[in-house]
Amino acid sequence: MLSVQILGTGEYVPTRCVYSSTLDERWHKPAGWTSRHAGIERRYYATEDETTSLMAARAAQAALTAASLEAGQLDCIVSACSVMEQAIPCSAALIQRQLGLGESGIPAFDINATCLSFLAALDTMSMAIAAGRYRYVLIVSSEIASAGLREDDAETAMLFGDGAGAVVLGPTTAHSGTGIQGTHFETYAIGAELCQVRSGGTRIRPRKDMQAFLDGACFEMQGRHTYRMAAQRLPAFLERLFTRAGVSLSSIDRIIPHQASAKALAHLENLLKVPAGKLVKVLAERGNQMAASIPVTLHHAVATGKVKRGDAIALIGSGAGLSFGGVILTY
Image 1 (cartoon, rainbow, N blue to C red):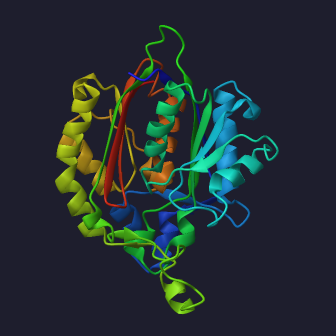
Image 2 (cartoon, rainbow, N blue to C red; image 1 turned 60 degrees about the vertical axis):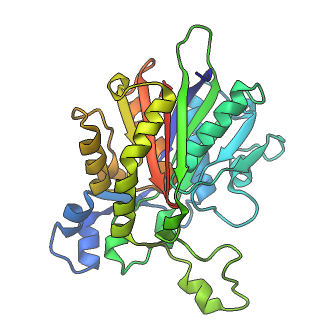
């Protein structure tokens, strides 16, 4: 077990609430269509003033307060977002500035594994803390999914929401019993084109073909193929995750899953055959928040008392790639 613990969690909810009834009207669907198909009653969209780094800093401040720490006590800042605020510099540098730490020299960098970015950062930075490289590390996932949605694509656009979630990591205290018991990640690049945003990097160059750049700037998802591929590989992945962690499913108190879709959550629940309530869901009120999904769900579980100190929890998700990831820890 790695002697690392989550000291505090935080969330930022954007100001603009979008109900599914509003989307019904936009797409000329019968009343209740979006809610029935998405399993989402409302989601939140960032306004133009709510940048990725601003939302991240607000969630980070909440996590720091919960951890009884000041921002200046951090040893490292990690942005774990699917989509950066801008190409250069890294989002973590912009978050550092939003936290008022622009002259601090605190190292800041990004870790990107799309919707699994938070879990990848948690895995990586836990090892750095356990090795003595850092003491207090901020990990924050902040997403503005609405910026890349095609408004006429009802099947995709109805699923996503914006928001930010953050945690502060630190070493465990003596005899606390908290720590990270195991992690496991897998990627199957045969599904790389199932979920993608083609523009924004060096693949499509606006000076050469501006229209192609604009066409590739929105999120593209082959939903049915993605679900089918994920469902086929998930059981074996979960078995390997729990084996590597050396724990059984029955020993887990709560499961914190990526809130991909109502169908994905139902499949996971049926696959694991867990009692009602063991799997924490916030999809109906938040939508799919990409990388922010897992830390937001974890924060909700902690804030509502569903996760308490000493509980064994499993953080599980999938992301573009196609990738799977999981972290088993004692909170």
